[in-house]
Structure formats: C-alpha cells, structure tokens
Image (cartoon, rainbow, N blue to C red; front, side, top):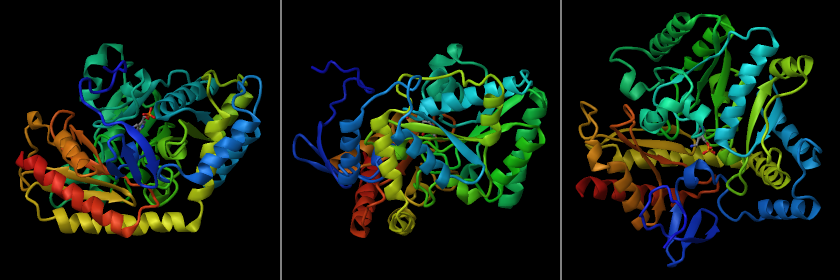
Length: 441
Ligand code: PMP
C-alpha cells in the first residue's frame, strides 16, 4: 500500500525506473514515448549526460548556500544567460523553485513596485478566464479555471477576469483576427475602467495557453493591443511563460513572436528541463530601480531560491537550447507534428481543432464538429485518452474543462526538442488510436 497522497487516489500508477532520450521505462519493462515532456517540462529528454555532468560538478563545489548570506557564480551565470536571451528591457532575474513560486513572486513584485513609487492604491489583478497560473493561493486566485478554483474560492484574494483569446470558440463568423483582437482589448479596457483606471496593478496572461486550453495561441496583434491598454493605464504586463517558454514554441521566449516586451515574465518547467525544480521571474529595469532606489529590499524570499544545483542544471539547459540546431528542430518537428495530426485526425468528426506552435500542440475533442458541442463531462473523454495512450506506450497531457472549467476535452503534446521524425510519426499514430478508442469506449 502506498504511503504517498497521490493526486488521483486509488489509481494504480506504473513505476518509472529509467529514462533515456524521449523514453521512460517502467518497472514492468514497458517503454513510453514522453510525448508531453511530462507537463511540457522535459525539453531535452531524460538523462541528458551534459546536464547530469554539470549538476555533478556543481555538487562537488557547493550544493547549497543561503541567499541572504551568499551569492554563487553559477546563479550569477544563469541570470546573465537569461538576460542575454531575453528581449531587451528585461534586465534582471529572480530565481525560484517552480512555476507557482514564479507567479507569486511576480505578483508581489508588481504590488511592491507600486508601493515604492507612491501608487499604493494599485491592487487589482486582471487575468483571463479558463487560465491556469499555479496552485498556490495567489496563483490560483489569478487563474480563471473555475474547476480548479471552486472549493478554494473562500480563501482566494479578489481577482478579475476577462475573456481569453480563443479564436476557435470565440472569434465570430466574418470577424477578422484584427477585429477580434480589438474586441478583446475593448473588453479589457472596459474592465479597467469599471475597477478604476488607477487601481489596476497587473494584467496576467500566457502567450500560448497550455494546461487549460491546449496550446491556444493569440491572434495577430492581440498582445500589441493588450500592451497598449497596459501602457495607457500604467498597468504592469505579466506574461506567464512557465509552460510555453524556453524554446517550446520555436523561439526561446514565446512572446518574441508577439513583437512586444512585457514588464515581468515567469518561466519554469523547461528552464530546469525536469533535471531540477527551478523557475524564474525576469523583470524590467524600471521595477528593479523602484526597489533599489526605494526600500532597497524585495520583501519576499524562499529557502531554496538560487539553489546552486538547480542553477547548474538550468545554466546547462540554456547553453544547449542556444545551439542553432535546437530551435530548428523544434520548428521542423513541430510542423511535422501538426501535419501528421492534421492528416490523421483532421477528418475525424470528433476533432474540432488542431493547433499550436513549435513542439506545443493541442487537439480539441468535440461531440459535434459543426456546433462545437463538447462531450458530456461525465464521459471523461480526456482521461480515457490518457489511459488509452499509456496502454499504447505514449504519454500525452489531457485536460477537461476547455470551455467553462466543466465541459470540453483537449490533449496537449509537448515532446522533447530532440525528437526525431519517425518518433513524431509514432506519437501521431498512437494518439490517433487512443482518441478513437476513448471515444468508442
Ligand atoms: N503557470 C503556468 C502557465 C503553468 O502551466 C503552470 C503549471 N502547469 C504553472 C504556472 C505552475 O507551475 P508549477 O506547477 O511548477 O508550480
């Protein structure tokens, strides 16, 4: 009997005993293609010898030094690498241990920034419905996924939500992407005015929505319009790249494809590649200066921030991600994955949309393609797909609640960037079979 409180109590999880490249092997000797990188984490695959060597070398130097006493060469090096890669204007780095911690830190940075610059009335957070920004209280409050929030609502601080940019379901017939972006920007502006145009602290969004919608990217100009609204009302723009960042969409930061620079960016998952738990917040010079010239303190912190071994893993992951062949492969294999999914599933009466960028792809399942009506939630199509896929040796990341937190099913694919053409074809074949089996069951 297990002594672990597993997420799904009572399910019989296989035991992972080994990992190599894009594969995980269980204790029964079954091999699974890690078609989702866990949850878009394992960007370089498993057991990467260079990353393991970098961690080992760091362990032999120093494994831990509390950041109120010391900095370390490896944490400083990692911050420099990140700033060098980031769009101009994001000049400082705050290291944490994961995605939720990054979001919490970014929210507190936004708040403290306004206190430091004499605008303490700015306290409202606006985010988007059907979003996920982490499971800790502040991050959960920021997310708009009703299913995840429901039972914790009484504990959550007040936040506000507007529509996500979700063209498949929300762009009207005859509406251009530009007009759709304008409509969403107008909704955001109306929310700002409703709450008090000098009372908003931050707008939070994922460039491409991962867990809650399944690789849903913005229409052209959406983030340009959002940036304009934020600038007009002095609101900080926080982009959450915890899932879609670190090369997943074909550029190191997904936001590079949007032609804007936010004030704060959160990253995690692919940053440590699964070798170590690590996340980070990138922040603008402006915010840094408010702290430096104000109280001289960012009033926040965790015991493991800047952990040297986590920093060593992330530093090596970044070094590898920067090799030109890496992003080339993400784009090439991403195109192959999209084409393969289109060919295998595009004609299915149960596949409404196949979308994404790079190696971040989502498939939305529907009961009726014309009306986009989802399956009855009780059928749990998404979790059946996961089971059927595991039986066929494929890990994929399924999620329900695409529409309103209750109804709607999608599957997310996010294989490691080292994936090869024949492996992409196998992923498509196994996923297509799993979807058919789940719907027929
Ligand atoms: N933000 C986003 C966009 C995420 O996808 C996630 C995790 N799925 C988080 C934050 C939370 O990250 P973590 O699970 O590492 O706390």
